[in-house]
Every structure is written in C-alpha cells, then in structure tokens.
Amino acid sequence: MASNLEQLQMNSDKLVIIPTYNEKENIEKIIKAIFSLEETFNILIIDDGSPDGTAAIVKKLQTQFPDSLFLIERAGKQGLGSAYIAGFKYSIEKGYSYTFEMDADFSHNPTDLIKLYNACKKDADLAIGSRYCNGVSVINWPIGRVVMSYFASSYVRAVLGMKIYDTTAGFKCYRRSLLEAIDLEKVKMRGYGFQIEMKYTSHILGYKIKEVPIIFVDRTEGTSKMSSGIFGEAFWGVIKMKFRRIKPKK
Image (cartoon, rainbow, N blue to C red; front, side, top):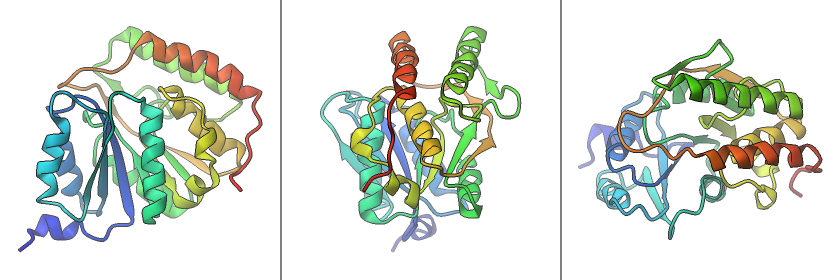
C-alpha cells in the first residue's frame, strides 16, 4: 500500500524540473523535501551522465514514488539550457499546467516553490524567485561573486530594457500557455545565459512577469558548476539578443 506521502504526490498539475550532474549528496534530500510540501508537485530529474551515481539514486526512489518522480538520462554534459528545454518539452507533452526550474543543491528553498506557484496561479505567467528585488538576499557567497552576479543583472537590465532585478535567476515557475508560446527550438543559449534568454523572450512576447523575493543560500554539499566561461557566454549573448527578432511559436 502506498504511504501517505506517496499518495499525496499523485495526480499533480505541477512539474519541478531539476537538472543534475554529480549531485549524489543532495538528490535524495531535495526530492523528499519537495514531496513533503503541502502542495503537490511532480519531479523530473534530467541527469547528464553523472559518474557519481546520481541517476541510480533517483531510480531507487522511483520505486517509492512511481507516479510522481521521473528521470531522463542523457549521455554526457549537454548544458543547462538544453536540459531545461528537454524538460519543458516533456512538461508540455504530459499536460502540466505549471512548470518549475530548480537547482538540486538547496540554494533554492523547496518551500519557496509554493510562493512561485501562488504568484502564477494568481496572475503571473512567469514567476521568478528573485535574489535582488528586495535588496540583496544571498547567503554564503564570497563578496566578489555577489558583486559580479548583481552587476551582471544590472548590465542585462540596462541592455535589454527589462524591469527585472534578478535577470540571471534560475528558480522560476512558468504557466503552460507561456511555454507553449515560446519557440524552444530557437532558444540559442545553452549555459546560464539561457536563464536570461527565457526571461527576455517572455518579456518581448508580452507575458506578465513577477519577481518573488527569496533568500538564496549557496550549496553546502557538492561542487558548484559556475565558471568564467558561463559569464562570457551571457555577456556577449545579451548583446546579440538585443538585435534578434523574437516571435511567438506558430
């Protein structure tokens, strides 16, 4: 017989997409934390061939949560953006009403999923878990990284003309109608610049975007995936993005 926790997670219209690469220290804890929330969420893990056995841990958990925990395994590291695009396509195909982006390392607090959901349920098409819309809400980052991230968002806001404080945020909720309107095949960026491109596309298409203040806590287990190349792609990609024509998917 299914446990109470397992029964609560069946038949949700909300899908949380979590890309992973070497997250064995965090993956079981983050999955169970999401499944313990009062709102019901399904989870899709997209693992890029983690050599540490992340996918094997997810497969074991699927025996406990067969109707709410799903896994896509990919060969090798293919990039954050391509992982989310695969997840978006899956979500659209399966008919989810709300689709979330989230990290596996607890830098995003699982309880904040409910805040993002409520924002979209009310009137937003895209809800962003924002580190900067209410001052700077970041814990355990070196000051240099805080400054770089904050001014990166300011740079993007200035170049692209979006009234979004946290343009590089990766904790988000999309309404189904917005994801269906975006031509996912034409999304160019595959690293963290992907986060900027999805927000800018949503902005240009005229959808309602709302920032929801969160507290971002740097990971305590596992290894960060950030690199200088990630910021280089975003810097030059934003300039190219400014001159692209973006149209809704036909």
